[in-house]
Amino acid sequence: MQADPVRSARWRLALRFTLGIAALLVGSGLGVHAYARHLLLGAFDSAHDLAIHSVLENVAVRGDDVHVDARGFAEEFEELNVALGVVAAVVWSADGRELARAGVDHEPIAASGPPREVRGDGGRMVVVRREPLGIGPARGVVAVSRRAGDIARDLESLQRALTLIVPFALLAALGFGWMMAGRSLAPVRRAFEQQRAFMADTSHELRTPLAVLRAHAEVHADGDPGQMRAALAVVSRSAAHLSVLVDDLFFLARADAAALSPRRLRFSMNELVEEAVLAFEPRAAARGSKLVLASPPDDVEVEADPAQIQRLVALLVDNAVRHADPGDVEVSLARAASQVVLRVEDGGPGIPPDLAPRVFDRFVRGVEPAGAKERGFGLGLAIAKSIVIAHGGSISLARGARGGVAAVVRIPRSPSWSREPHLSSGSAAARAEPSASTPPTSRGARAESPARDR
Image 1: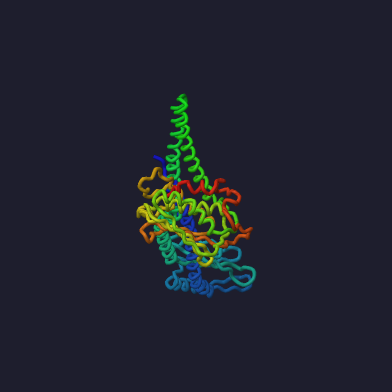
Image 2 (image 1 turned 90 degrees about the horizontal axis):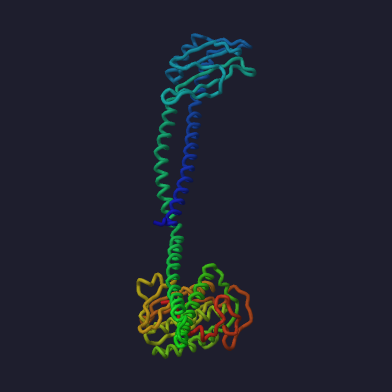
């Protein structure tokens, strides 16, 4: 079974997010522990200073001599042991001789060492403070050791809390990372599914004309001239069918790569729409329909790519004619502030509710009209949307007044493009240079091609 690449990417993103949060939590926990330890020891030092000062009251420094009142030293130690938890007090001379010592249940203390020294842990944790005697050159050292069980208990409580919080925080981070990765990868999953469906549908669409071409080439290779002519006619139709499909796929591929690059020509939208209506009138009449055009009396000029706009109008009008069922197809053109609004409405069966959210997706076909000789490719509306987006506009489908579909296109009349010569009379798109997005065919040939959408 093939692994789901999007799901694998989602797990990787969630795990990386969790690892990042883990590093942040561990670092923060260590920082909090160190800061709390510093604060606790800082508060502990104030009482420790008092204990050292009390011990020094029994130590007299005269020149290089240090004298200790042994009786007062012992009595002071007893009081400090009860009041401040002092467990040891030691005085040394400058040459390292021990001058006085008092203590209960403590480890030996050396004269040399850091000013503050933490020993043991838990309930047996002690803090040793060393202070030099006298002013100027040291004439000795006094050391006082105090129990620090409260600090140890507080730090152990903090450590237990961090130990409990971090795993739950990591589980929450994993869940949050999984959720956020899923949301972030949702467009990727949709694109992946669309690409997979696109490849499957493309393979299916290409298989039929290719099979027809191959079958006729093999079966009629040695046939009589009459059969050969009939086979060539079928081959020609299949090749034309395949050519249109490849052209549409190439157009959509360029749209995906943002490479449509509409040209910047100023032309009359009225003329272009009128020509499209005239081109489709024979087809509409053959289906028992009638094209009705409503446009403003004065010209509606736009700056756009005439070939692409021609293709857009042809797709929408052809699509409406094919689904008129039969009935009139209403085409209207109007201004709306800085936009031109094109509306094409038919009286057909409309869009099935299950297809409404996907109507602009590729290879999505709606209900084909009765008596249709061939099904479209389902690419027309996708191409129309690509053209509209490339021109900075919008397209939407809604239920028409007569129950059919009304396609509404809004395109800016004057985008932020430099103005070029005005194409005023005749066919603006026909006189324009062939666009890279549309093959150099005549308007009639393009208009007679199927819309290939719903």
